[in-house]
Image 1 (cartoon, rainbow, N blue to C red):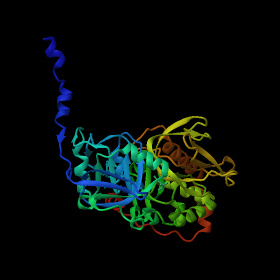
Image 2 (spheres, rainbow, N blue to C red):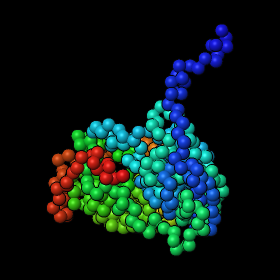
Image 3 (cartoon, rainbow, N blue to C red):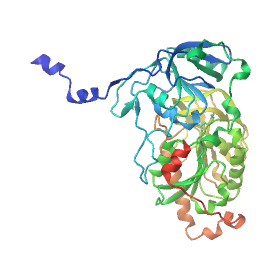
Image 4 (cartoon, protein in one colour):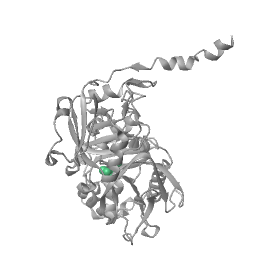
Length: 443
Ligand SMILES: NC(=O)CC[C@H](N)C(=O)O
């Protein structure tokens, strides 16, 4: 009686067991080698798509959320090394959400895998999760993305940390027996404007009945950024990254600049447009990661390439100033994925101040307009929307929209005195498209 009570599998767990599926890695028997341009090679087994690729090899210290990281457009062109040893154990969910005015059409961060390849110590061939519909290997195979398993990811990470982010090649199958590629054969994704590849090609609107109108410049926006704005009641118009917002700015209550892949120095045209915006438009502006870097460039700061960047969900940042829900002197744990950063300079450009600093490497984690500037502009290098990661700074979206609503309320009835509409070319009508179509184009 006692034994039966103790050892009976509770109904709940028995239910879970039905979700576990044995799924052999698609090409587990093929050999695979990860070559680094610096001369090192790591031999393992292939999973996912049986094809070879080049890319930029980076590491992430995140423990979970491989599905969100891999669909984050900021990982475009990158061979993503997970430092956590077991990856794939909770499988991959169906990536479509019902599209209503409150959502953005996907469950993960975009509609497809964005990174070039994944490197894991031990890929889980068996997965278990109530929302999982396939294994990591089959998801990679369906999306044409190769993976390598059975390699020493600690050794690879130590190398990348010491020598910096390094170009790589994942050679699969017969390619695995070929010698290291020559230095000039390695493809450097950062030489390309990756933002232009992932940004929406046409504007589209989410939640058109929202009470506050926000324009989003899409450098490769993660879905949870758009969701975080929409779920807080904003009507969101997503614009191509190089769209000149100045031509329509009098119709909006706030401007948001998204995350995005590659070198921010390819986004000079967006920084030039923003400089123009900041000179004559007094509504709130908020930027995340690439968006923060573009705000910094518009403010006159330099964006430089870090040695190995920060990628993971456990990056501590210290707030240097208070604003909204953020308190000066507090440390917030954040989600990050970046290779570039704004250079700390003293003095900061007039009208600007550092907002956050990274507790590990002292890099700039945020900037804001000063109180004296009369503007409401913030940029953060980290990801308040996380997905995955901690939600310590999620209320920054609430803060931003509260500022937009406050400025909107002040301006009611005074739009004709808006300085920009007097100065600017006639507003252009904005062509808009349905959200689902546009989300597909984004990814
Ligand atoms: N997540 C991001 O927006 C990254 C910004 C930029 N591509 C960088 O690597 O620094």
